[in-house]
Image 1 (tube, rainbow, N blue to C red):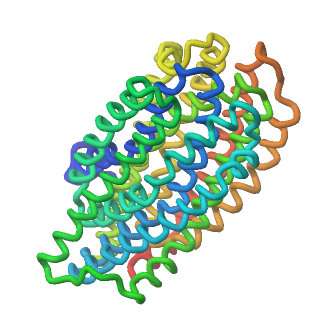
Image 2 (tube, rainbow, N blue to C red):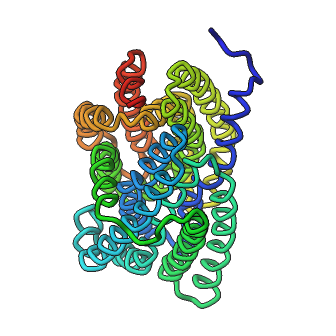
Length: 447
């Protein structure tokens, strides 16, 4: 049976999705602000930021399971009426996030030049990239704690607290970066330092919010080996799923680097705006995660199906609206990032491809959110690997056959984004759509 527009389900979706949007776009907003401020330092700085920020977003994205697993598990436990166990899972998730963040940040600091070189960075571009990376990495533990704490709060159907923290963080990030880059004259290093400080502060605030709630209910604040082990085990399939996505993104960036400095700089502009739109649409996936988790925890599979149907409609519609806005504003938006006319023209061409692909992307992210909420991580891992295999031949075609030269940069960027925004997203969406048509995910989530 179809639910009419404006039903309580619609209101529940929007009540979760709208605040989640603000929290989700924190990282893309950081990248957008950094891109806008650094872009006016020069093309080499903007190209260097492309490489460094891709590695940082990849590091954060690889461990997004810290948010996804806690959202799903806390949601299902609360749906089953087990609040103490839900908070216990959340506390262990915070400790796991802190440990992982410290290890990854240390490894990144030690291997920064090698990592940038492996992505195709050379000369002044590589120097700028390594500088930004090393100044930004100390904030990584804070950002992973943000993920875990946000997951706990979302599972408890609280998306407002992450929204407030994200909004404050975005304002602080812009102010600090402008001060450090232009006020203190630190250049690209100032951008990395400002972002790192804000990420650490956000992590501390959200962790305090979760810990305070747990202490009020008598839940111990120390980690448990059982909980840490469960978090790693449950997060493993989602780690693999996200790894395949991030490998695709990294290979896309390295392909852009082979096309020349102008296409690489233009790709940073397009990718930053794609990230903003992606996280905006992913707010619907977050709503789907929480609502599906609660429905299946309470043994109500018919409600989970209703959430699937409605969020798919919202995902496709939201993607279409964002696509129209992006297509209309493509040219003026590029001026915010660079004054180089070649980069602006190539970026605008890529943004028109992205605009056309956003309705498909909205459906793909919603399907991911529904299956994550049901705890169907193993299928998502296999689907991610299969999608990557489908994508690689198309990426090879772009790398070998796309036109070169500054004058051909718009066509190079169009080829690149047709491969990623259309082919890769179609492969991901096809697999998850097939899964959602059956009942296996409903049975799994109701266990």
